[in-house]
Length: 130
Image (cartoon, rainbow, N blue to C red; front, side, top):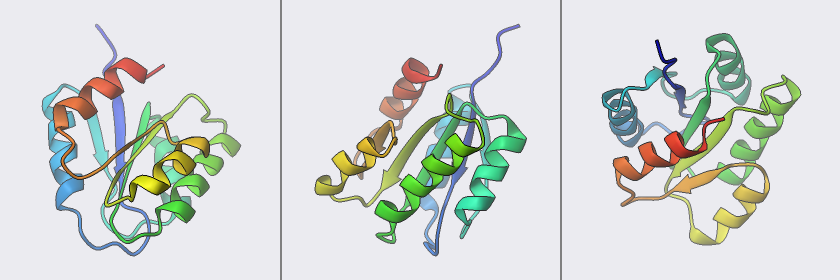
């Protein structure tokens, strides 16, 4: 039996809008992934601990509040500190194009902005999970 890809969908910070995260979570589930959704207003510590406890392959971060340049790299660093360097970390939300290169340099594998199709997110994860 093939092991399914496990994805933690998380909403870090004070962002209270989760419709996009729920759409992505459902699309990932429909694609055959196991999906754990953390809910709103999670701290980086809560997200990393959940990722560790759930033994996920992917952490998918969704943020609309503008704190992505602070929160995403912090979560990447904390995952590495906990020995989860093989976990694929992706982000999405309302993120300016000018910020994407910095997020990728900090260890976010890909950043999905508004208009990205769910099928392209699914394919990226399938292609890049170790």
